[in-house]
Amino acid sequence: MTHFIKNMQTVDGLISNLYKDVSIEEMTKKITGLMEQQGYKVFDHQYGNLILEKGSRTKRLLLGAFATYYKFSVIMSPNAENELTVNVFQQSSGMSGGLIGMNQIKTELARLNFLFSNI
Image 1 (cartoon, rainbow, N blue to C red):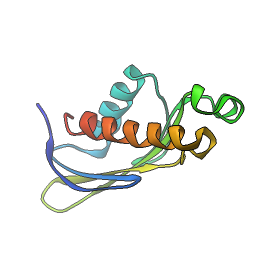
Image 2 (image 1 turned 90 degrees about the vertical axis):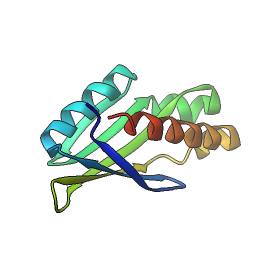
Image 3 (image 1 turned 135 degrees about the horizontal axis):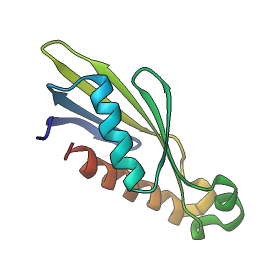
Image 4 (image 1 turned 90 degrees about the horizontal axis):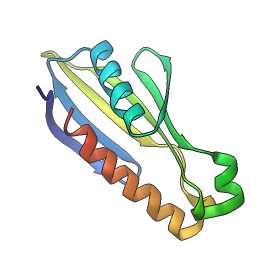
């Protein structure tokens, strides 16, 4: 069963989605499982805050766009009427990969938008 209601905002570096009938703990488990399948390391910093990281920052600095590195933060906040807002923020700009690296980050954010809309 998908909990996704709608995408509230998608701008450069931010995805904001609205979900219904799901708690922060359940959503944390769903996001963690989904992102680990995608090859991300998930760091749970505190209640409703996650860091998603894929690839090596050092390799990205040395090899530029030839190395993969993505970093996003997820912030969950409950709303009224048993709703949950999930915001995904871009934490790496891709500048170390030049224009190609910046485009890779935008493409990955669009892919994450699709994945998060299927939760």
